[in-house]
Image 1 (cartoon, helix red, strand yellow):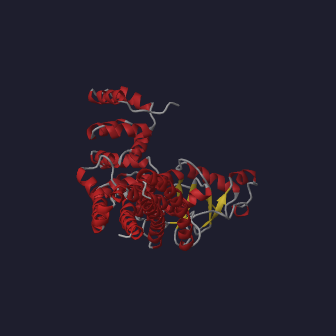
Image 2 (tube, rainbow, N blue to C red; image 1 turned 180 degrees about the horizontal axis):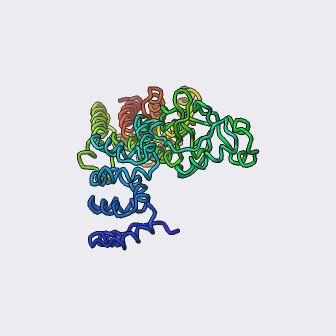
Image 3 (cartoon, one colour; image 1 turned 90 degrees about the vertical axis):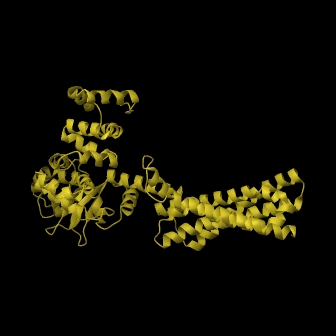
Amino acid sequence: MTPFKLTDELLEQIKQLIDNNENQGLRSMMKEFHYADVAEIADELNTEEATYLIKLLDSEKTSDVLTEMDEDVREAVLNNLSAKEIAEELEELDTDDAADIVGELPQEIVQEVISEIEDKEHAKDIVDLLRYDENSAGGLMAKELVKVNENWTVLNCVGEMRKQAENVTRVHSIYVVDDEEKLKGRLSLKDLLTASTTTHIRDVYIPKVDSVNVSEKPEEVAKIMQKYDLEAIPVVDEIGRLVGRITIDDIVDVIRDEAEKDYQLAAGISQDVEADDSIWELTRARLPWLILGLLGGLGAAAIMGGFEEMISRHAILFYFTPLIAAMAGNVGVQSSAIIVQGLANDDLKGSIGNRLVKEMLLALLNGLILAALLLLFTWIWKGTFDTAVAISLSLVVVIVVAGLIGTFIPLFLHKRSIDPAIATGPFITTSNDIFGILIYFWIAKLILGI
């Protein structure tokens, strides 16, 4: 299958079909595309064109298209649809996707949309999901699943599973519950098929099953599913009742969103923004860290001002100032990036002290190698051995301190339940610039006797 690529020519062709109301040709073309590709097309159309496309296609496909569309585009399209039209789309969606869309609707029309859903059980499940915090397993889960009672026989079980499977897009697991709906385990399809029709489920089910609580954070759910290679995981309430399931496609979205957020924090962007957001929104997201960088630069300049006499007598020190600052920033970001990644993957073991000692030894080894190269270069270039020693020794100390700062700050923030990703990028770079410049000139002053 050739990957879909939206070209300018194809987009222009689609727009012409819409402008000329050539519905048959447009329907025929859209049938050839996956719903994710149709969503990509809709994102590039204006609101009127995207709405026209959504209304033209059948609800079974457009409901999936809506879940893949850009949030801003989807919001604009939904504002152009009636409550009944929105309800028709929700009927075709799994409850978790339907609840996400309902959660984006203006509060004044939510009740009207829910009342237009003909499948009242589906509507009830959507309303149930809306009660959960969106940043929890409950807000992430879907109600569609296949469950059987431990007291049923295999024959009864097969009949009930057929009924339930009609509402489930994909059956990942068969869950076993007791009379109080508490999760007991899972049922192997092989065991079900090979057991006698009169055998009770309690005699053949597997009692061990991984599950998460409705209040669990999505990031923790992602870690569990990633660790145990799960395609789906059941969700239970506070007393152990089975209330839903989370599938791998939802977890992929969580992992992607978390990675984007951490990347933005590391780059010094404090809010969740996209390239198409307004200039004011982008400015608000970037400005706090830029101000921090400005203050750090002013601090470094003030420190250099205190060593003005030394710089005037040994101008070579000034030439190496950018190198010292850059090395401090780079080492700090490297150290913090490894720690943040380890914290995200739960790979870090041992105490903070042991981690700092290891990082100090690593930074010392790297620093000595780099300092030796710098010493040789400076000595050959300027022929002043004591100055070369001062610069090289400063580099070793600066690298060790930067490594310790880059390691300690993310670990400290994690202990305080603050996202450690905020420690990378501008924060580490700015702090290490200041400490690096201070250490550099202080050591140079001691060695050169100024």
